[in-house]
Length: 304
Length: 237
Image (cartoon, rainbow over all chains, first blue to last red; front, side):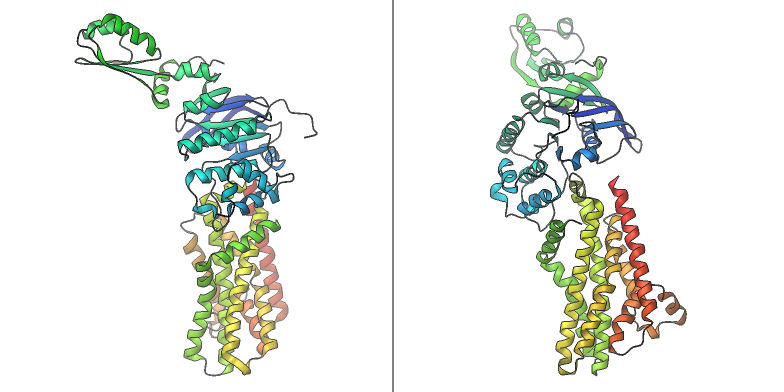
């Protein structure tokens, strides 16, 4: 790129989008600097895919503005600055993987060589296969290859690993790491806390179309990492348990006790100190949906 | 229009054997059937061949629009929008492919027609008629692509069928043009398939108002191209 770099890879201001009566994105402001790796984390229906569509110009906002490297999404796509991988971008029937990549290369002004794209996406061995005859995980990698064709500065990924098995998922993120080593910007939507934690250096937490938290993975994890402590506690009464842990998140069913907490270690220590007879103790991490349930009570501060 | 995309589309068309055989083969099959029933002399065979040639051009081009609709709803056009390829360019490639399919279907009817007629065939007239059918199918390729851009994928098939049957009827495929009810013929004269048929019959000695035929077909082609441009241009924003 010869022009002076725009200050933001992505800049969203007051973004709103509704589908009928459903408000999908409800006032999102977000600035992503070049080189950042940002996870858009949220449960299903949080507005992640809609936000991605708006950034890519696949739909138009009801209000607010989208700028990608200071341009409109369409201009950014045309200039080859953005590569994107959608969840539902279909493949063309009766076309081979190689033909699809060659097709995308033919419409971009400065494409990477087809062989290099296939190599980078780890699908060189699939070049001769029909794109619609592949598994979900392989299809995702074709979408990734298509995203790489313009050698973009920004890659936007919508739930990239959703159809992949564990091994493929690991390979995929390894390929992404190689890709971002050159200082490129990545924005990916996911509902896996682990992926956000493992790959992003910034996590934006989305719920009901709002940003509810924005910060380092460590910060966001401390907000959403809810633990459930289960145990059989024969030697403490319900009243004693309430005295120790409060009523919030505590369920007592005879001797069976369940405590939902953001501080699993603390609860465990307190429990063991007061109940020598406690047994069958189990500490489990809550999934994101549960974590968000616990967030509903304290959505006040948007920390950064 | 993007050449790589158009070539890829044509290659895909040729790979989809089942659809190819059905689309291109049906009019030829009908021709053989009708010819067995009514083709008592070369004149009757020629008429049937041209009628089915018209039908082949209409059916192949209009049905190609159904593919646009399917691709739109499957999400392929969404994927394409992540590239600099313009929806209008996509529509042009699709129109070319629809036309190629139409040309293949018409040609097959004529090749079989030639084989059936043997030595009695008027070869120069057949070539002229074939070329006119190719050219005259252009507006229907545009109709097919236009139909693919509107409405739901579920309704694409019946919608295409209605337009095809209407076009075929007005083009004298089911009932010869001169046997259409009087009022119907005056309506048909404003529709391109009527003139497609009239032009294709002309090399075999039928009289035709060439100017009116050319003007009607050209006007429809321009109108439809404008509609395609408008509809796909809107998809761009």
